[in-house]
Image (spheres, protein in one colour):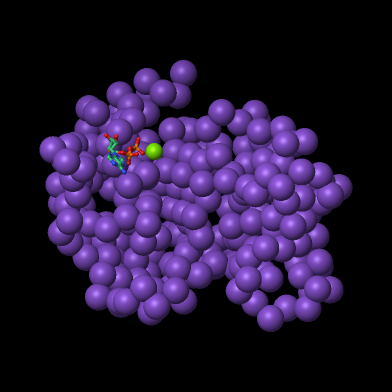
Amino acid sequence: MKETPNHKPLIEIRGIHKKFGNKIVHRGIDLDIYEGEVLALMGGSGCGKSVLLRMIVGLEKPDQGTLKYNGKSLEALSEEKLIPIRKKIAYVFQYGALFDSFSVKENLAYPLREHTQLSEQEIHNKVMATLERLGLKGTENLYPSGLSGGMQRRVGVARSIIMNPEVVLYDEPTTGLDPFNTQQILKTILHLKQQGTTSVLVTHDMHAIFSITDRVAFLKEGQILALGSTEQIKNSTIKEVSSFIHGESY
Ligand SMILES: Nc1ncnc2c1ncn2[C@@H]1O[C@H](COP(=O)(O)OP(=O)(O)O)[C@@H](O)[C@H]1O
Ligand SMILES: [Mg+2]
C-alpha cells in the first residue's frame, strides 16, 4: 500500500479530544484508516492508544471531534443504529477475555449463535476452520484454564474474527508472547489482509511493525506526531520516533 492511498478512507478520525477528569489524553487527533491496510498505532505507555482503539469500536466517546465509518458519523447514530456497524468492527482484547466456563469451541460458537442464523453443522465447520487457521486444531474441547497464555490469546483472536469483520482492532496482540504464538497471530493478520480485512494494531513489537504493517501512526502528547509508510517511520529523523524505535528494538 502506498503511503498516501488515493482511495477514500474507511475510517475518518477528525479533531478528537478526550480527557478523564483533569488528565488530557487526546488533543486533536486526525487520522484516516484505509480499507485493506494494516496500520500500527505506536507511542509511549499512557499516550492514548488503547483509548483511541476503544473509540473506534464505540466503547469510549470523544469529548470533541468525529469518527466516521464508511462516511457515516458514528456519534450521530443511536445505539440501535450502531449495532450493525459494531458487528463489522472486531476488537481483540489484550488478554483474550474468554468465557472461562465455556470450552474453546463454545467460546467461538457463541457469537455465531447470538448473531447469525447458521445451523449447528455450519457453526461447527466455521469454528473448526477458524481454529485451524490459528494453529489451534485439537483444542476445541479444552477450557481456557487448560491453555497456555499464548493459546488463550490465539483463541481470543479466533473468536474476534469468526464473524468475518471488515476491521479488526488488536490491542498489543503479541506483547509477551513467544515467537511461535507471535508468528501465528501475524500470519492470521496477513491472511485476513489478503481477504481485504483492515487491521489496526497497537503494538510495541518492532518485529510485528516492520514485518506486517503498511503504515504506522506515532502518537505523542495526545496528537499524531508522525504518520507514514512503515519504511518512512523506520527511517524517521524525528528524534522521539527514532529513539523510540531504536531504543525498543534491542
Ligand atoms: N476509563 C478511564 N478512566 C480514567 N483514565 C483513563 C481511562 N482509560 C484510560 N485512562 C488514562 O488515559 C491515558 C491513556 O490511556 P491508554 O489509552 O490506555 O494508554 P496506552 O497508550 O498505554 O494504551 C492513561 O493515562 C490512562 O491512565
Ligand atoms: Mg494500551
